[in-house]
Amino acid sequence: MGICSIDKDSSKELLTEQPREQKKTQVYYESKSIMTKFEIEFYKKLSIAVPDGYLIQCQIPLSSIIKKISDNRYANELYRTVDFGIINKSTFEIELLIELNDKTHLEGKRQYRDIKVKQICNEANIPLITFWSNYENKIDYIKQRIKTYLNY
Image (cartoon, rainbow, N blue to C red; front, side):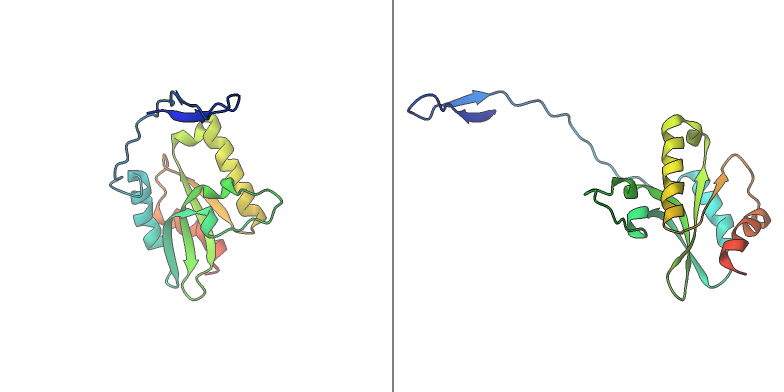
């Protein structure tokens, strides 16, 4: 089936069939986990490292914690996600964001994305720290890195 158009040059409305572009088939499927295996392992360590009084949230869209004031209509850059957020249990405010990077973050597009996320977080006054999945990231090391931001 195509799209019909009207020939305005004739006194009668003449409907002509115009071919419609072929659409590519889209397939949706369930992702079995919201985290990668590296993120799951890191989460387990982070759960031990984070003191009482804080929650850990994974896969946080920036749009849910940062608002944009701009003349631009769209805030597409806020539809990026951050791997983990540490949230104060009393106030439900974000205290710290954490990115767990793997080797894909060494690629050009990912590096641009990481820089942009860091800039957005800096402007919003939300600390963001990065860990790398190719390191062991022992619990004591994680505690040391997050301690400054969680005031314990």
